[in-house]
Image 1 (spheres, protein in one colour):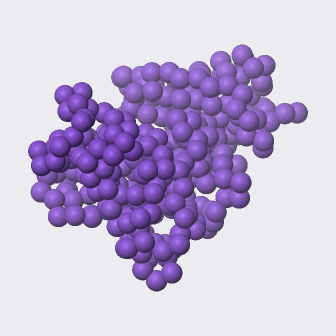
Image 2 (cartoon, protein in one colour):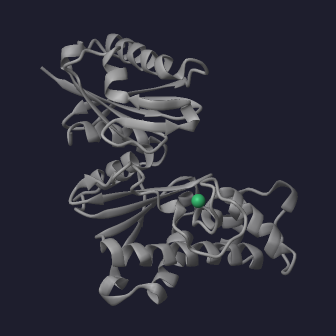
Length: 310
Ligand SMILES: [Zn+2]
């Protein structure tokens, strides 16, 4: 009898679902629903149960053929327990117990933070997964995930891998975490746009500052625009500083760079590498940097592949 797994990526706006064959991990069907806006502690889980049942039906799959459901959540989580998730208005919530109300209790449920799950999925999608990997996700915020000895590092409270909030400069403006000087305040999308405006006060640019996008900044940097190049250089420098700190703490096999900003491609990786050489200590200077490959599906792929780990 063929077996399957589900990967579910719960976000503040949407919930993404992926049905995969197991163990081949071939994507059979994707689905997406809006995140329910009320009764978050029950409605999200009942919706997940309903969508899984309807996807089973559509694909003529029995619940007994499902090996498990992997779930990515947008907040720190430790052993399936969420202390607080402002995005989803969850407090002191046991996800295993909540999910078991809507799915058969013998079904394996695997839960972790979305960036940790993406890290796991990216690493598993490599031809030979590494034992130790650091994953950055660069988007509106900067997140990350750390894989040590093949396991997600959740840490004591689930805050493990929150590398976007490494302190890398002396700042005064508050970050989303409440403190300041975080990596996210250099490499998050709003920081990138803000810095572009700042540099444009000092240097000439061909960028249209009234309808600026992060994609424009990277495109113009590739084209030699001074302001855009300065912005990318600054991102690369701070990414390199943070990676060099992680390198002397974890000495990972690889750094994987994902998230929307990583669509910039080689220019981003090359700039990080250039600066990393200066900041890396001991023999950590040759740790490779690669771009993530699973893109928008990182959450569902990671969540589904995490089922077989648990
Ligand atoms: Zn922060």
